[in-house]
Image (cartoon, rainbow over all chains, first blue to last red; front, side):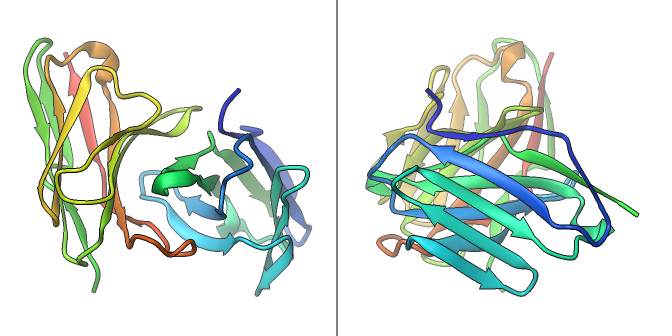
Length: 110
Length: 114
């Protein structure tokens, strides 16, 4: 079983709608979770992190964590064409090991 | 401005060559990481280090080694390059201890092994 798993997509969402990205992790000892966005040909950039159960909101982005289900999600409200990118979920495991999922390619259609 | 610098943006090597990929950070970070990125596979962790001279294997360490002689520098070594090591290599660093510190990435090295 992979340590962090994502649906690789592609996920296609109309402009203005809500995009929902999901991630599961296998290690119950994982401490924190991160969502990175990566544009083609560029390095990943951090969008949000979350380490407590529940929701965390930042502008149009909401991260959700459910430790009992080992599930992390990212919601993007009012999706814009500029949100089209690959979204990477990452888990900070024990001993500072940071592991990424395979990424979900998101396309926002005007 | 914080910086993680990878020595080469593009590199072409021949099968069997010994290859060094260098990474330097100027933020006094304890933790440094080497990932490779291939289409559809995301970022896969090769090795990481949480202190000088300390190293830990990631998920795909076979065929690679690392060196961290100084805090700011983390080198990835391909002892005998093979075509299946053709990939984008990303170096990253972060502070240690805190659980919410973000990862700073270098701009990547696209390695082609012919």
